[in-house]
Length: 524
Image (cartoon, rainbow, N blue to C red; front, side, top):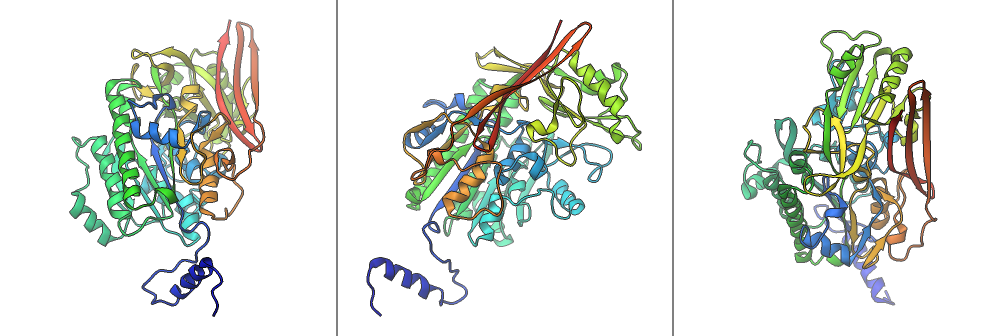
């Protein structure tokens, strides 16, 4: 047999390898099978905190690759919403997850639930025929193409990325779910415990310690033998620390430095494997962050206004009762039997308030946007949803952006989930062989763009059409997408005492839509 080129020899070796014993895994080679993608999520990382002092590893990576200055979170700007969007590349109305906390009677008829918890995910799949997440995730698609994946994280949102895997977890409940988790067989779990010690579930264990544990589990255990095609590491900071101390506090800045050290560990592990030249790294946050100006007990406020409002049902719910589900800067109102009269009164009450920012509803009401305007029209969507008001005022550390929230945390602490520009605009930095070097992109981009972009980098054919787009403007050998178009939607309603006005600013690149910000007020 005549070999005409080195490429022919390479292909021959690859083909002969397929006849080796079955214990040796064989992969048909293509231009992309030696490529790897690593996504590192810094939960709650605002892009304006990237600096040589706060985040030297990320700062350096940004200068090597691409910084996306107009990156967008999905509204509501909360963790699980964006975990699902990052994983599936589609908005809530197509993947099914609308908020961190939802009310679905089929899953729990009495109270709202955290939709990233393992038990909830399992019940959700049982009640939906396996469609709790309606579309497959990046990890599921890549594995379906015959490639390996690895997931590790310290927040329950990690489960959404690979919910059918054999998860090794350690969970500690203390108002939030905190754990170190990764899909791995029992033998690898035993090795993890032997090498890294027991999982960190004690109250005294810090987020810093848990994130380091998860990073080591990924780089030292899951990457030990070879580098998977796709890896995801979800770090709980700076989010958890900023919730307690607000953006810009010294402890919050220390949390950013901690996540940066974990990123440095990931990059060092890739270098030791001689894999930097074949690996694209994307560092992204799920949302931005703001400081709480005021917290409101919405069930109490609604009851004082004459509504039959509850945070949980003690008995069988009655028609017209309102289940109030707080999500920080966004509140979901579920009206039993979708009573339109109650919904009308609720909308009018919100429009006269000093805390509503943008109001959305299932049905058409004057001065309100439909749920589908932000792709929030899921099958289990609330009757009314409000993004609470925000402003640009600085907090005590000089960091701009304050919001009104539910009563979960007090004034001066941190939260998100509104349509504030500081919650919506989040972090994305990408570097590697698939991306241009030393580039700043001002084209709108969003978390829904990661799934199609990752699959393009890996050469994996997408199984369906995404809401997001491939970030071609930042990739080597790709052409630029269409120019962006920005528009502002407005809704208003006049009353004898004044006028309610709200707006929503959106940007479009081709067929992909991003929500930039929104707010509203009652004007007397």
